[in-house]
Amino acid sequence: MKVTVFTDGAARANGTGPGGYGALLRYVDPAGRKHERQLSGGYRLTTNNRMELMGAIAALEALVRPCEVDLYSDSSYVIKAFTEDWIGTWKKQDFRRGRRGEVRNIDLWERLLAAAEPHTITFHWVKGHAGHPENELCDKLATSAADADEADLLVDDVYEKEVSERETEEKECDS
Image 1: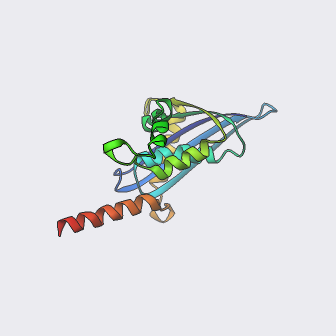
Image 2: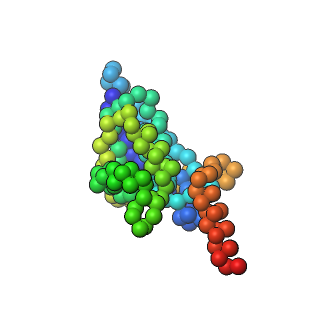
Image 3: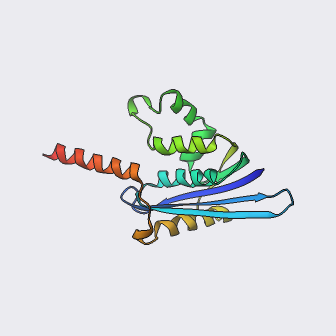
């Protein structure tokens, strides 16, 4: 089955506020019927890059059998990781970048790799906020999810733990 996926992520006050992701999946079934599914979700504290990753993850995790996927995103971070094989280098180096330390968002990169495993994926970059209809729709889904009532936002446990640990370290250094 061939599936076309569009994704986007958004964060308010990047790293210190809420964020969301949006995804659009399209395919034509064997009878020639067109299907479309929209996905979105919001987190109370996250980053734009984490939400860009979550858009791709949510879309791929929604697929119930191996597919041929064309995935479109305006995130160079996500697209170049595959088209320029950053991900291969990171995996070989146990997600370390030499002196620059660990790759950020390892939890989500590993989740994305697991979600991608059964599929054949071609990654495509699209310019964001340039009138691309599907990208604009995904942006709207992502920003709406980010702007949801706080009670409806999910907790990004890994990111919030990292923030808490950094704040603790900063307080200890200030003492």
